[in-house]
Image (cartoon, rainbow, N blue to C red; front, side, top):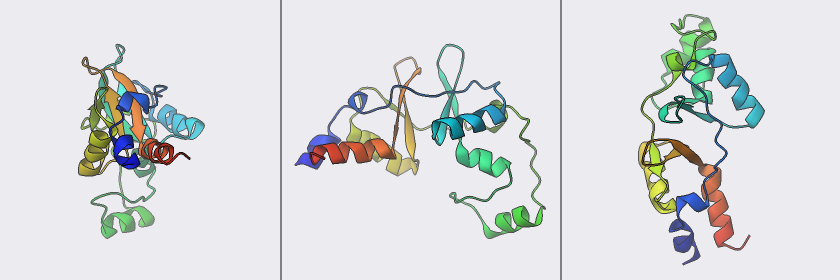
Length: 157
C-alpha cells in the first residue's frame, strides 16, 4: 500500500527543479564539463525561451570520444572498430550540441504521477525524463534516483 501511495504522488513533488541545460549552439566540450561538474548524465537542450529542443547524454559524448559504452543496439564490430581506430566520426569534440543532440526526447508533464513517469521510462528504456509544461518549457527532471527516493520515503526511511 505504501508503494502504491508513492507511485501516485504527483511528479511535481519529486522532480528536481534545478535542471542544468545547454543551448544547441554550445560547444560539446561545455556539455562534457557540465556532466562532470554537476555529476549528471543527461542535459536537456533548450532554446532561448526555455523550450525543449532535444537531449544530450554522457553516452553521446563517450561515443563521440570513441569510448565504447553499453547502449541498445551496440554491436561487437563497433567495439572492434573503436579499439582498432577504424571508427570515423563525422562529429568532433569541437562540434556543437546541436550536432550531437537527440531530437527524440521522452518527456512527462507536471501533472503526471510518479507511476505514469515510471511506466514511460520503462517503455522507452530511458534513465530519466524531462518534465515540461504546456508550452514545452523545461520545468524539471526525473531520474532513477528520484524513483528510489520516493520508494525509500514511502518506507519511512
